Length: 220
Image (tube, rainbow, N blue to C red):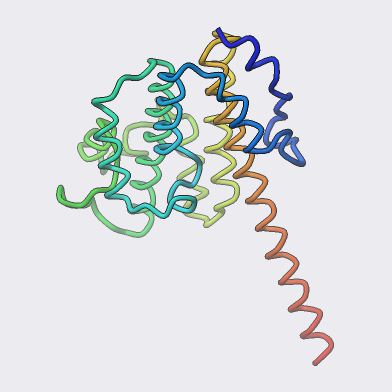
């Protein structure tokens, strides 16, 4: 149990109601020093695999991520943490398939890394099925498909983040002072950081658009 660690973590507001992060990454990492070594190692490996926007943060290729996932299969994991890794890699795999279908591309050949784990094999067998035959497992999938087709990247990210956030809420409730609560907090903090950064990027874009419009008016 991690009573002291969790007691020292500030309340984390839901991503749709937060204006800022309640704690810095440095302070969070300082609290995580209280983790048992095995749990700290597992959390670090999970973060490497499924931090939000790993391609943006770490600059790794799809092939590198697939290879890292394959190596993770042979590593020890606490079952709830591995369940979250599976959830996020499933999201990434489904989204990769939806993007290919949205672009009019077919199923990639077996030599091309594009998805993770058993879900990739299932999708390959159900490529032409409505919603890849997975809407019954992922209620967010039809909405994600429509948002991707409409080019609404921000709302698509909100839908995926919301699904992951709710899963982590349920996981933390099962063991409020256990490892489940710790890694749930860490990954919700990660989601919140990415969401606030998304809002900041959007704000900068809107500001530039406004400047462009003002400049155009002044010079017209």
